[in-house]
Length: 223
View 1: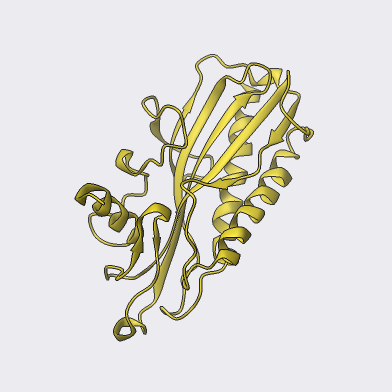
View 2: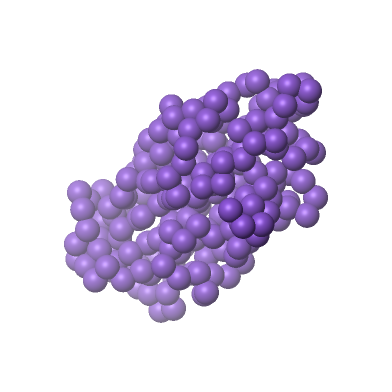
């Protein structure tokens, strides 16, 4: 791996450190899940959180009479670790799917698939990390952007967890992208490096993301 990607991964895996603590996902951290990042602009979500997003100018969201939420995925596909096991990764996507469907069902009927009048939500988890507060992680899996923990000598330190997402919103009839969003959030704080990260540690973040997505859609619909 080249030095630049390594530096990016270390930055993502230690979001609490000075110099890497931007609340926005930096362009060099984009995963490649979205087709085009050039038009993204830094804004605030309905809850006041920092997001990078793009909405197609003049889009009429009133044309959408139902919504189809595609199963969320990890992009790139992560490799489980002792700190963040496969059960945690699976639990994150399972819960993300559930909360997206629950929140969007408050705005539109759920559809079984894309089609005319269907808003398609295509979400991905693009980063998960658990890093010691104020210290560099000693082990990083670049492709998953996952910090695997810290050495025994620093095991008494508290740990920060973080997670990032990218999502595209498409016209189910034309397959045209009508909106995109990129953001990250802080999960629950772990007691120390021996505590295994669970999907529950990210639920508050995932809940907030889903609520903001639906609130943004409803706001556009009222315009």
